[in-house]
Amino acid sequence: MKKSFIPPSIQILIYPTLLLSVLVILILIVINFGFSQITKQRQAMSETAQNEKILAEKEATLSEVSGTVAANANSVSLALPEDNPALFIISQLKLLAISKSVVLKNMKVGSGTEETSLLRVALSFNADGQTVNVLDFLNSIENVSPIITIEKVKMSQIGGILSADTTVRGYWSLLPKTLPKITEPLKNLSDAEKDVLDKILALTPPSFAEIIPAQASARDNPF
Image (tube, rainbow, N blue to C red):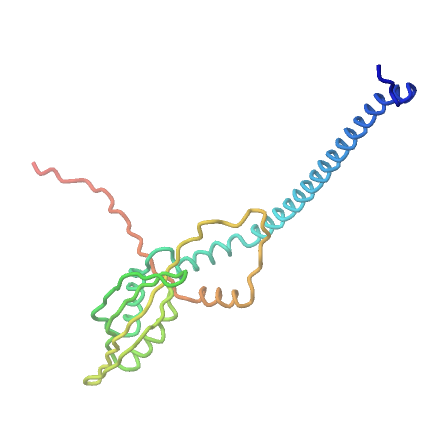
């Protein structure tokens, strides 16, 4: 039988010491876990409080400007719609031509093309009339909604009548596919953005004709 080099008094302490060491390690693990959970809870509570503050500020701001925002959004959607605005542009050009005593001829609509984030459609026509009226008509095109830009103009004059062979562009843009997070703070418009908005609000919107259904009337007895 081999003789142990560890005295019996020491051997008696080994097992309790191991148990105590394991217990201490477990306690340290639990304490670290508890601290980490407390830290996470504090962070979550801080984020919740911050989000509640942002939502309260949003609610207050939107309550103040709800009517203005709705009107501005409608004006912007008319100026830069989400669908091809060719029909609206034709209607606007015809109304503008009538108001300026100009005759529009040979109206043609091209196919839509995409350039960067904007979609574009080309329209061409001849604007005939007195020189002053035609020039006034061309200068007024930029004042109507949807947004129209003049690409090119070729003028000719016969018998005192000015004819402007004109090509214009209309634009539209698809709505964003994703919305910002509800907890994202509201951002005020920059001075440049406010200037653009003011110009859009100053545009003449299209006039929408309301069709009123005919009232039913009594029929005469044919017999």
